[in-house]
Amino acid sequence: MKGIITVLGKDKVGIIAKICTYLAGNGINILDINQTITGGYFNMMMIVDISRAEGQFGRHVDALAALGNEIGVEARLQHEDIFNSMHRI
Image (tube, rainbow, N blue to C red; front, side, top):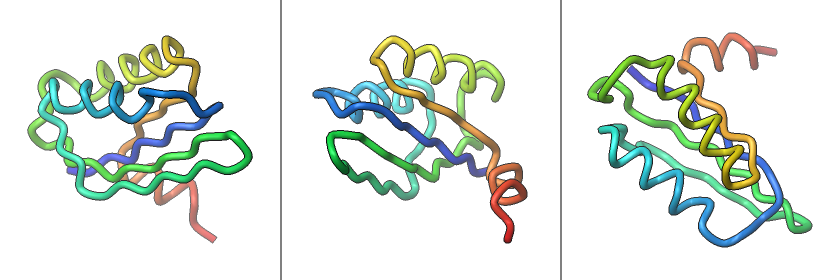
């Protein structure tokens, strides 16, 4: 099962490190990652494998949102199917 993580906010040191540390500590594998910094704003999108994640999906949604708040960015985890449904043309 795949998930999509998006992270948006003002750029600062340690954003990727903190998000990746959380993922590694919870058995979530990064399959693809893309990040850009434009005009001082950080934008990252990750495709992750959540099939071996420790704990329930909702716990990771909440934990990543809380981690994002802690580091001053918006971090969101969604199921791949929901993300795709929301972004159909």
